[in-house]
Length: 442
Ligand code: URA
Image (cartoon, rainbow, N blue to C red; front, side):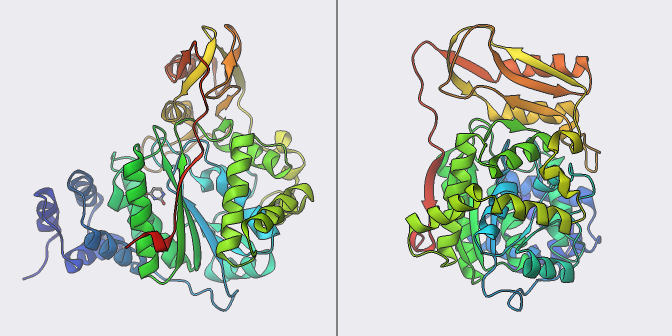
């Protein structure tokens, strides 16, 4: 009997497990434009509501990876490293971690995504740099790893077309926060892009797609297990996303903060995450004998300026203006209106809701509400206080970067709801909640 997309949607809607053949029929059909967006959207919603078995998620991942070309990087370097985040607010890790790891001598080849729902995307951020392009052919991708040791590319038509289409569709159909859809999206890209050592940063909290530790750990374990099955060295860190990471939220603002971090002047929480994850990747790539020496090697890339120089070379290689490293204020887009949000009361901050910051940045124009919407890279928010900090009444909590006064006023109203205060001292949330190694999984 010939398969039909509508029957596959109905089967999932009714809570049944799909066979690998049915999943492959649907995914390859969608990637080839034979199945339309509306059926794929209905299918994504059915998967979100009904879930998938471990076998289905694995079949989905492998089918997505097969929807296009799969890179073989063995002729480029014995080990190529990659790191991938499941998405958060203020998550500019790739822009700082890539240069640090590459400057420590370990080649990094990465395929990144765009903003998704309330979470920003690395490509949207890097495109704030005049001239910088995410488009790399296979040959350019490989050549850049060889010559500079660092490449961050977008999904080409050739690599994982199924994810490229599904990712944009999920963004605007409220079908992002689904464990099988996230796991398959991340791991299909990782498998197809060819890196053999992969560190996953699974975000957990109100500003992440996984809000509970239990769900985040399950997602992390699922992805590590899929990676192992595909013959890759994969580990995962579950990290906090209750408040924005670092201080900047918004495309160009985050590039500026990543640059400051590479200069050794970044926010402490963000800097710590970068150094820890970079050291972990070096260990996974057997570039260091123990944690201390890995940590020393990554710290050295900041203090010596080699990480910053790596960023410069990387920007230039992808067509961007390398002077952005020295003059970010002149070269990155700046919003015309900058307005402080003042604290209406004194106290210790007990909540700085990351999701509200992400959504407000989308409303300011920094993210998409419909597939293909243009975005304004200049807008966003810069935080001046985070959970655990004491603030006086009238002290600036954050600065809103907006296109006009009306947008800034609307953002101020939204952001006020992100905060909560306590009379008692509050400890900041621990940044790293869990580390998952392949051996931890049965
Ligand atoms: N990152 C991805 O690449 N895909 C998702 O679905 C979520 C985060």
